[in-house]
Image (tube, rainbow, N blue to C red; front, side, top):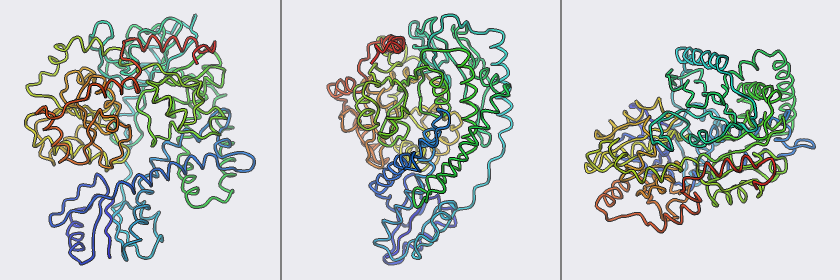
Length: 614
């Protein structure tokens, strides 16, 4: 038996080679999800989902175990925690997604070595180098080496202009610190959304807009924008919305101003030098502790992130300097486990403030950011208080994430506060999108696995190229502002012409107007249920990661054919959402859609210092 494993896009010259191999007796091929195989005489089967799932879980378990691995009288995660700065936990998420393609490839090879005498593997050059020598029966055909992306000079210049303007605005309109006891972090890309009271459109933090509006004069708001990558094609567009005060300027401070003040302080560089030297010494201890196999691979991935370690240490010290001058009882943020945000919370906590995380997206078994060990819990690595949407999320964090039970509080989802008003104004949202046909909304995502991301888009466009009864709207994720050409290319290849790509549209207005919603594992799926909309989950690996299908609030589609069949049945009213299942789902996952989540959230933050919140 001979196996051909296709883990990268074959070029035009390689397709005939693969097809020739498949003509040989006893030769078969499998393809990684998302690969656009263009052969005509044979089409490989997809790699079984169980292999991918098992590989992902094995890697995640290994990363969690590595943090607890003893080195002398401490664990790895304890060693990598210089000055109340748990850098190991900053990088776990990155390590997981950096290693996942390699581990899935290795697991697939190991699986097919049990039934094949020879294996030919089409994969990236870096993965081929990592696996050379694995078994003499394997022949690797690596792809061309990817060229290093050029410096993103134009976008960096735009960011520098933005940075200077933000600092200048902070100097001209300094915040009033008087009476400020709590701090809210606003790092989100500003999106089009509606004001809670007036329903007028504005550009704001989509998740926290109403919370920021309702927070009183005892709150200070730190706002900043993610800088563009040094290399690549990511764009950074200057616009007036980046500088709008939104009626909150007197109680807002620019994160860029805080960073500049830190960078101008000689003491920051002395502290950073000490922390980096300590980190280097401790990584040396770990390296000398007889690492092997998966441990060595994980540690190599961690040390490969040393440049970002230095950046995060700088951010931590700049914010620590700010919090030493201006003390707060609490500091709260969404996405509290992402490194750039965690720097702020950890800096505040090092000066005595309580850190509060506010759930911003779905949480699942495959998300290292929310999975901790018992040792992590003992060392208080997670936020002091975590506010979640519903009881399901609380149980998940306590039972699977090892969060202390009294640290997780159910409040509901902040941005649902506007839903009661939107549902009572259906004409307003229908008019906004001027659709002549039923609307199918595909909520795209920058899925870390590039093959799964492409497959999702390709299957959607392929299905709707044969569904003239719908108009397809692709609602781009906030992190996909530079992906318009990416989706246009996939749509063209699928022969889909009747579609719109929307980036700035208000998501909730779009959901209110939609007749069908499609997503993979996005929070948008949950929100579609809040609006009572028919929901299809594109799930080629049949994982049902967020339990939509099991809960009876969505239908599962593994390919374009199933997607088309389900969409047709919904259009013809042969399939309808189950209202009772949706009510149970909301109670379990979102507590209440009552317009009062911001009110409950602010009350818990204010009560945090007294201990009355949990």
